Image 1 (cartoon, one colour):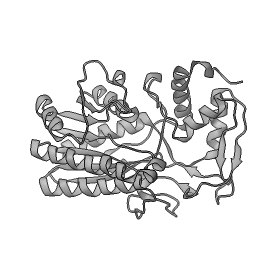
Image 2 (cartoon, rainbow, N blue to C red; image 1 turned 90 degrees about the horizontal axis):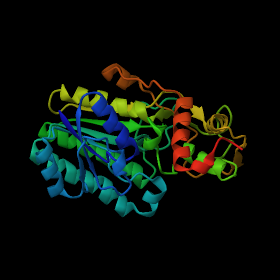
Image 3 (cartoon, rainbow, N blue to C red; image 1 turned 135 degrees about the horizontal axis):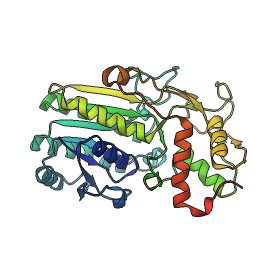
Length: 328
């Protein structure tokens, strides 16, 4: 098997490439390097620089490298930006996916793993989110992920591809400092930034119906995410044409924002209490995955805990920001 990994020079993508190669699978990275970093691609893994909107470039890459399966991680992923630029998000995430699938079908690619998101659920009012929980996305980003799932499933059934959509929950951590997330868009790096700038981390609302009043989320280590991709890819390779799966990828355990900020202070050596500000519109009180289906179907479950995520992410942050040091 040869797997082409779109977005394989990105944060999650680089971890998927590493996990694939360590598992003995052959990987090829396809990335436009708009946010990806070429140095993340391991030695010996081919890097094809190109856009998923370029069907000819994709078809050429499939033929040159004998691609038999695709793991599609490339795309735009910022909720706020998607509200401001919906046309851009639909072009990159939906039209880019259509072009990629068109090239895959014409090239005889047999297997397709799609990077989806828990954002497809919107604001679920349930204790644990299952794959059967209604999907009501609240942003253009979430809409593009749900539309992507529909398109992947339809193409798989029509053309005999085996397909899977993986709905990630809140990803954090790093396998190594050089693979750490370079963006500051998620809670963990946002708290790191505040602490190292000498400011208090912000908690958006402390009056939710949760044990400590702050929002509760399901955090998962990026290495666990990567290993879920390997397990999914291998299952697709042994499945009948047209088979389709949808899996939540989470730990099934909730951590509140206050608990997370306290843990980050403890791990980093800082002691800066969080500052509570007003709620953000659209933040659900609790979003925690049920990961029962992926455990039953693939035998996969998350192995790493929240402290592992924070400690490994902090090592990467210090590498990128040498002045961060160890606390104040």
